Image 1 (cartoon, helix red, strand yellow):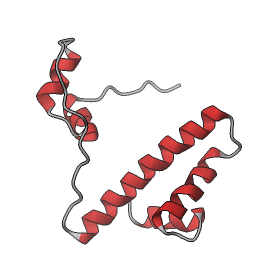
Image 2: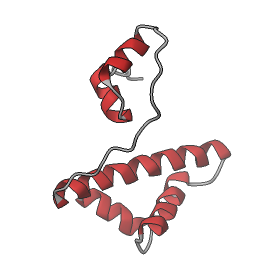
Image 3: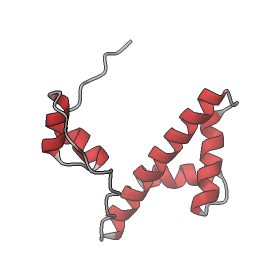
Length: 104
């Protein structure tokens, strides 16, 4: 079993799109009001946008697969990929998976 590496406040702030100072205050145990998480704007460059979109879709697939796994579904990752493929306009899950691999 590998030990999970702790994340820096900067990493946490980047992931959730909140201010670094608020993250540091929360980690210190202070009661801080944090504004709702805002969606990070996509980059203007098309190459960066595709990478941004690929990571966004991967997170979506992981979250949906986790929900399906908890519900006891069979092969939750493939089912989550198929659902995401329909949502994002791909023919099927493997086609989405190929696109995700090409745009890492």
